[in-house]
Amino acid sequence: MVDLVNAIRDGQSFVGLPDTIVADEEVMVLSPTAGPTIFTILLMILVKVKEKNLSTLFTVVNSPLGEPPNTVNNKLLLNIITYEGVMIMVLMIVAQNGFRDEEYFKPKASLESAGYQVVTGSVKTGTALGKLGGTAKVDVAISEVKADDYAGVVFVGGPGAADYFTDKTALNLAREAYRKGKVVGAICIAPGILARAGILKGKKATVFPSETETLKQEGANYLGLPVVVDGKIVTANGPDAAEEFGKELIKSLGGPTKK
Image (cartoon, rainbow, N blue to C red; front, side, top):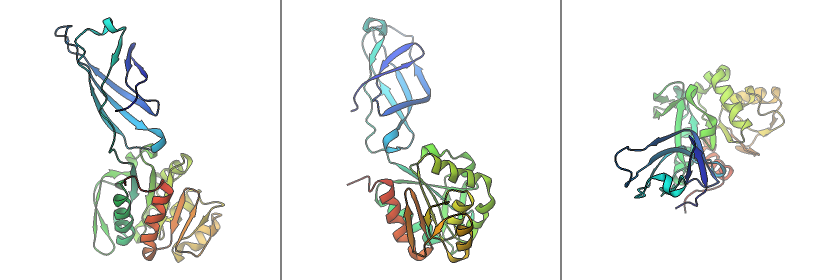
């Protein structure tokens, strides 16, 4: 259970939110009108744990008090369902057609084994096709993505990733994630997306050979290494570095979330 502090909504004072959790815009209060002697409030709160970047969660609170609320000075002690077990979300963005299979599947498996929830994004929801024939279920269209909902945003390489070089939505998402202090990752040619977004200027980075000049032109300090970490930016140069890339992403995210 979580510690209780005051949260105010619609002139009614509710006790129920720890100071590391903030109520989102949508807070719905349902109170049945039948009988004041048994008063039940269902409070649906969109909550986020800021310091851990937890995924958005619907928390249901149920408090049968046996008395109308005004007899307890409008302060309702709410039993809050614990948020233990909610996973930190990482967004992996793949090309709709032609992502590099190993660069998606290997880091994804590593992240999930470490306790992270991987959400897959692309131009549209449905199925994305890998260069080597693998498929990925696309959970969200990048046009619908909010960087705030994720601890990290990772761009997967492969020939299809070149589509994002001039994609304003993808470039803006990279900028937003970087500006908000998220872990930003890219592998193979995908560091070229970060470079074109302007977030590699003055940063150490690596990339697949075909994009080396792009990184240099955009002000990156190119290093010919398999994986490079500079602050919260993690880059890798191709499929052979996919496993190490996943490990470095986990380190940058703060390590495994489960024992």
